[in-house]
Length: 185
Image (cartoon, rainbow, N blue to C red; front, side):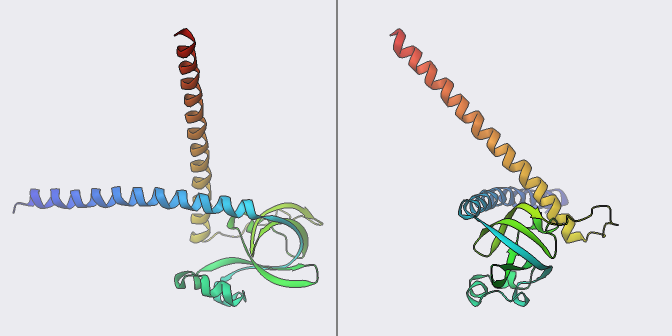
């Protein structure tokens, strides 16, 4: 076999892999958006005092046993944003969304949207707000990747909403045309 044929075969395989990854990735992204929407729908407001917040491994976080049994093994060693809070008289550990983890004040009271053991969003922060003029910490590689992923996810959601609105507008125009046809006949 000539080197040209081998190169073409390798390029064809690489292109096929990228195409497969694109379709699998888009399907997983839609699934993730649906799951996030379900979390937001089930969220309830709760007033809580934040005692401590850390990025720690899921197995070291002190979460309930059932949570650890339901979590896949590969995620049990991954570092997650864990927040130790006091809700009423009860102290518990909750998992926090990456996007709001940095905004949460330690030893401060907040009103947050909670879905199960997952803090989805923060409505209001009571008391002292975090001073942003402090010297910023150097962000690690993983933190930069998470930030970039959140930005891309927001752009994708906006594009999906725009596509849905455009589709609805086209359907409405088509319905008007059909109605006008029926009237003239």
